[in-house]
Amino acid sequence: MKTYCQNIEGRVAAFIERESLLHCDAPVVVALSGGADSVALLAILKSLGYDCRAAHCNFHLRGEESIRDMRHATAIAERLDIDIYIRDFDVEAYRREHPCSVEMACRDLRYAWFAELLDREAAQAVAVGHHSEDRIETFMLNLVRGTGIAGLTSMRPRSANVVRPLLCLTRPEIEAYLSARSLTFIEDSSNASDAHRRNRLRNHILPLLEESFPGAAAAIMRTVANLEATEKVYRVAINEKIRNYRKDNAIDLQRLAADECAQSILFEMVYPLGFTPTQVSDMLFAVNSSGRCFLSQEGKVVAELSHGSLRLTDAATIDMLIRDDTHVVDLRHDIAEPAMIAVSHLPVENFHPEPLGAAVAYIDASALDGNPLWELRHPRRGDRMVPFGAMKSKLLSDIFASVKYSASDKREQWVLTRDGEIVWLPGLRNSALWSIGPETKRYIRLFYKNGKITT
Image (tube, rainbow, N blue to C red; front, side, top):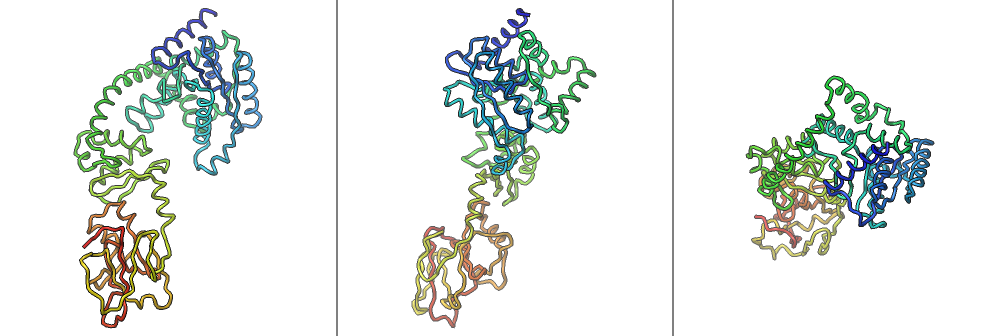
């Protein structure tokens, strides 16, 4: 059995060296749940001479079983003479502040703490116990979900500061190693539940696949290895393509759509931001539309279509604009916020049109009678106004389309209203409402200082 353990440890050592995962000049934080994979990882790295720090997360999701796991992890660390750090988490409190699944909440909390430990211990990496079957499961899940070549080669030996030294081992090999070392491990009862897709795949589909096609698991691993080599060539080519179509935070979708590899190129550009393959297809289909928006799955990025360009914007910025949308203003003096507008009150005898287009508005001073509510806000769906010189109202969306406004232009346009009625689009259009007429005695001149002059 000693020879078997040495063989396993030698294979892991060779894998670590081949993939350049670890060195001996700094500590390694080892995620220790108490299960077979993490116990074996800690024992192997310790035997290979690495300076290990065990880290155990207690999410308190399984009652007494969670306490059992923590105690077992502590006992294993003590037996191997390794320092252990334990952190308790309130998952539900986190989810109240960050709406997400329990699985995602645990992942966020776990890796945020690991990042703290990396800094505090001046550690080189966090080592986790994923093995070859985990990689097969991820391959299959991504395959049936729909993904690109990156998804089919996911769960790599290294992802930033996270390393996976046991990807070269199978679960039976790990359990045999633990038996040879007389090391015990605990089983998470939730692993037997079919509530999660990964469990259904692990407990039913993959065993049936292996029974029907002996050697299927090994064949999938060879496929993943082949795809890894192919992906390196693919990445060089796709990055060259991406440079042709990206400009700052925008994508030239009009030109990209004409590329025979448009689907793959756009997928690689926006998938890392949280957009799905279906959304990628919809973006290309809507290439000639303007104003169409797509929200990433985590709600962090908005992709806006405008005249053949796809602009990527931080959703938080847009949300802030919407929340701070309406501002009460006073037309008796200059306005400084949220837009700079100079206000002058003049007798009608002084009136003379200026060549400043909609950067200037002239409003009959009687519009102030009755103490009306004046507000500056951004456009809303269904907004209408009567443009100067017209008899009927028009949708703002039609006005914006006529001047080829982008989605961001529409969102940033200010709207001046009187008791809810639109009387001016600063810098864009003047309204027929409250315009100077034969009965006007005094008028208000409004000059939009920080706007573009639009004639």
